[in-house]
Length: 407
Image 1 (cartoon, rainbow, N blue to C red):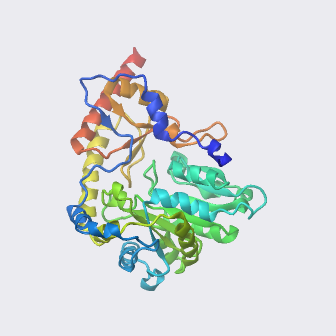
Image 2 (image 1 turned 30 degrees about the horizontal axis):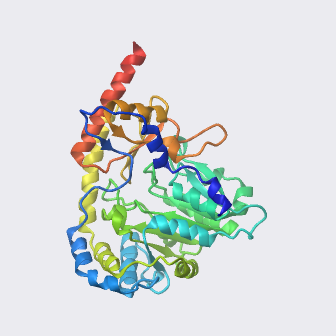
Image 3 (image 1 turned 90 degrees about the vertical axis):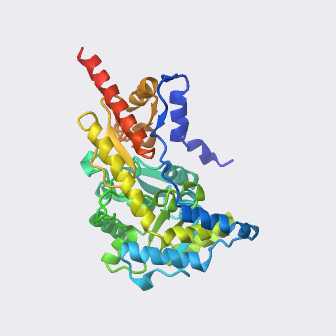
């Protein structure tokens, strides 16, 4: 077996299960899960209709490249959403459908890392805290992760000026995530331009995970994307840049396993070659359902409004009890805890039957500092009434904790 498997840490939800294992929460309180970022809003009915009506096409082998109609639809969506030059993304060269971005983020790293390409281990630079696939993919590709802290000092986005030149010299892949998981922070145009400048200087690839780009709180200010940043600096070939998008969060379709990768045509061609052998092609019914979803924006506007209602209600209840950055995008609250985050999560479950994710499960320590410590990730994916109930229980839990401390 690949010896790098031994380098993998337990997945956050494995650690969470172990944390809860011997606890019996109060039976008179229904369990409320704020731990998993799985959308609970209804999937669009018209997408389900397309999926059902095309089910006979499951009898056919799909191609890895996907249908021309799907690739054209994706290009049209990218151009409109990120204000790209129409001829800069084409269905033949610029996009590739994938079976969910989790699979694509992992497999792209495997295809991008060249273990013989530099002196010492190649490096994948990534935010800290982070989506665990970034780390696991880097380790299994034979690379060394380098973690860039994202905390209140950096507005919860990576400050790339803090990365030493000797790390950039070995860097082969910079993994970005904007809007961020778990922080919800959005990178600025200037920060993305800086990343592109560094990629040019040190000759590495940027992989931008933009799965939460369509869940934002200000309808007039959608988050910027990496390809959009390329356009602003006049780079229409998107050299060294690829982005990852998904229907999971945008359209409440996590089980559809549908997304795409887009950007640098040379990188897309190489990734297609990898995926042809990898064997991850999207079924034709899923492709048709995806076309319907990417072609419609009305359901995404409604989706965002539901999240705004939840954020407004929950933050009003928890203000003064938990400290958290002002939500910009995604459906997470990245809240500071009055005690150790693992203890907070354990005791909250034991007394209030609420599950949330300790920040330490999503981060790594560096120089005796862990940006996830004393923070918890709350996924506001449940129904609004459940989220409000959870917030009220958390408020009561913190009040009781403060009373005991002050006694």
